[in-house]
Length: 116
Length: 110
Image (tube, rainbow over all chains, first blue to last red; front, side, top):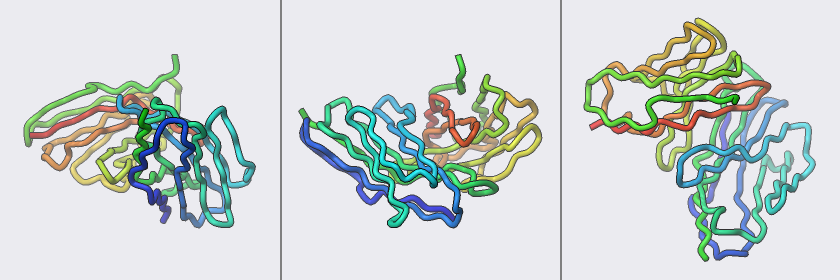
């Protein structure tokens, strides 16, 4: 069975601090996909990134960066110079190759609060 | 505009009163699914459909039904809602392993 663990339930930071959200996953598939979603207070799910298991390059998009390490089964998300608008729940998710593993398996989410 | 739509967006109902939440996508995707989101539990899949007339249970199917008579529509049916089905529900369609989510339906069962 697939599993995603986000050990940090809540994180609170002051604006301009850097913050890292942790994600650890488990799967028996050799091909899989990892995702991060943002859920602002309005409730919709906003796609941030998808990474497949064959691509371990780190990615940077503006203030956001992602560190994928297969050796530790982790896909961590860092926000640099956080802003109040970053306050949201962040979900890490895993999609396996096929069959019953095709579904998105979500972590329980991390509530990030950025204080001014 | 490519999108997944859900209706209603908000619903307050009473125990035992049958309800249907509609879901429609205009992207011709074969795979569709329903998730529920509860505090501290993340999102969990309720049912999914690989194609028309093909549906299967996800992780938390008890108390729900679905149907897939047309590719674009995937309604979620609660035949006898109970308070433990109070939740935020998301419909999604999938293509090339990318998930496209609807805006969510916030359901309260009193």
